[in-house]
Length: 260
Image (cartoon, rainbow, N blue to C red; front, side, top):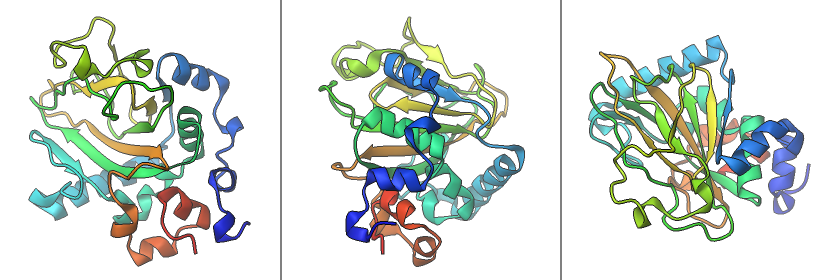
């Protein structure tokens, strides 16, 4: 292991088994061409159950303050700062295949920007097509996100829509007359619980309305940014000592907190 001043993204990814070989070529090609890829069966039954249980427990405990660290949204249940709220989330922001996918997209040193959760309530949740980067593609990618499906995503319960290929183009706000409207080329993320979708955050995307009768649409959003950019949630500012203690040096690097 290198000393703290020698830790870099290559060493951190190697320590976390997130090497280039951790991501199959098919998924690399989809990230390059479409801007997103789908990884089935990432969460097994026991882990999925534990994540759901923690989601509900935190929503109940935090009440109207839930999600306030980053963002609250009408018509949804939101959670934020999940790194600090249970070890059950540790496997999300350290998953080797997802980290390898993020590195493939960003192509340089990166860090966790935030780990949040969202559940669009019945009748709610429709979003305009947007990106997680505020401007047009400038020749390189700055952000990458992943959606962890805690429930089945269906056409009825508010699945995410994405417009393939738009990660190398204009910001939707600069070209779309109505970003809330359906797009003729949009694809819907319909997949079973346990799936993870990794997407280049420059792609046009958005949640759809939960049209189900009481169905849940819980998901985790594990979001990364190139290392030169600020985090959505300052991990160093919020980090609890008990969280820091259970982390390896490589994980601390990914969070951009003190390694030693």
